[in-house]
Length: 432
Image (cartoon, rainbow, N blue to C red):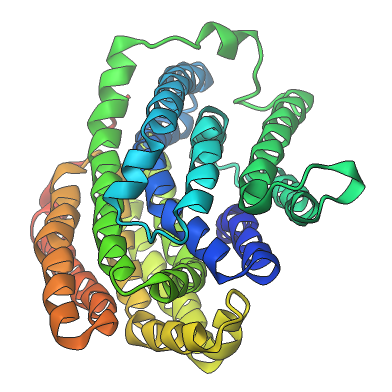
């Protein structure tokens, strides 16, 4: 799971390296400035995938493969419809969204081209993300890893090829990364279809799954009941990032480029924490489906210990090699200094973030999503954004990053309180 999540972001990271090193700081700022918009549109899909994977996990734990495909068919149908809506909306209002973010004028033309291409790519990208989540619901983390290896390899080759115009390809400038991403995940989807059918996989696109590609109201209600709060949480996170990016943009394009570099490093440190939380949620759902809810405590404890060992080790490495890590994305000395300082301010809090994610993941496996999600949303709305604004007034750009540790610590305290005082006393039952 950790390797797959790292690979899922590696393509974007390497694209940022290619763009920053081959096209310069302004091009990197253009790509970084589009990230919160793209994240906003995939947030709801992540929520749908989370809800569907919990249901699939419970059905798989109960040894009901036909129900697994029925759930997958409903989720994929909904995902495709949402992807088409995102492409239409995002492609139409791209300029307005970038303008609302306060994108610096010197990077707006490049950001506009990159954002429009990414919006058009959304249907395929969202279905790909959703399908990998569904596979994890049945405990298959290897097939998504193979698909992501293929996608990353194709993207790594095509991005510099489009930038330089190698092999007769058109020179696409900053949109090279978006064009390479589109081709890479289309190839990955084709590979998934072939590979799963060849292995007679539980989620292979066979006749039964094709017949299940329709929205079944009962299953849709369950997917939405679990997934919508998670999607709302992701949307709130993305909106908060958009607000924070607007604050960062106010400090100039160097600050925007530093924001992009820091986000890349932090993403890799937080991937293990997210991977452990997702795994805990899937194992919890399968245990509940199989009538073994007594394993939830052991799953939680193991997840917390793994977070200390793995995320903690990466945090330590991040501090020791911060200059080299940030230097992979930026060539400007002033931007490098800014990014390194920002990384030092908040990197340690990734361990705290991991603890909170594991607790909420285990609770989500039982269908308890409203309170854990409400805690996360309120911490973001009432703590992260206001504290970033206030601290930026006193400490400048550094103040924006000081808000992250404050928010993660508050989130952990509240999630842990609900987990120990309320959730552990509830009766755990199957949902499907």
